[in-house]
Figure 1: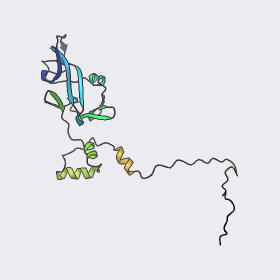
Figure 2: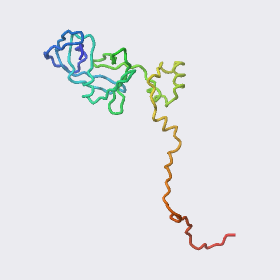
Figure 3: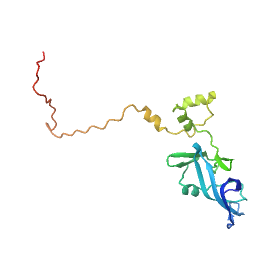
Figure 4: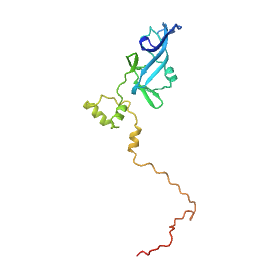
Length: 193
C-alpha cells in the first residue's frame, strides 16, 4: 500500500471499496500495480498487486505479500531480515513497535537504504576479526559500524579447523585370534647381514 503514484512500475486505475485504517478513517483505493524494490547486492524484488492509497502518509508492505513473492521474513528482538533462500536481501532494526524499511526513490524505482552491516564488511575485507574491523573503523579506513548484528561466520570456523575429526574406532573382533596380523612375503632372494 502506498500513497505515491510515482512508485509504481506498472499501474491500472481502478475503484476499490474503501479500506478502514488504524485511526478508524476510511481510505479510498484508486489503483493497483507493481512496485520494484532494488535490494542489497543489486537484486530486484517486484511486489505485485500493490494498492494505491492517496490518503496514506507512508507506504506499507504487507508481510503476506513478501511471503507470496517467495521471501522469508524473520522478525527478532532487535530487528528484521528478508531472505530469498540463503541470500540476505535486506535487514533493519526495530523502532519502538515498528519494523521500518527505509527506501529512496530513483528513476521510478525504490532503493533500500541500509546501515552498514559488520558481517558484510567482515566478509568484504578478508574475514578480519572483530577487533581489527573496529580498529579500521576508528581509523577512518572503513565506515563506522555497529556490531549488534555481527553473526557467526561459518567460513572462519572452517578456516580454523586444521584436521577433519577422526572417526571413533570400534573394534571388529570379539574373541582372541579373530583379527590376526601377519606378514606375507615370499622367500627372500638375498640374505641380510
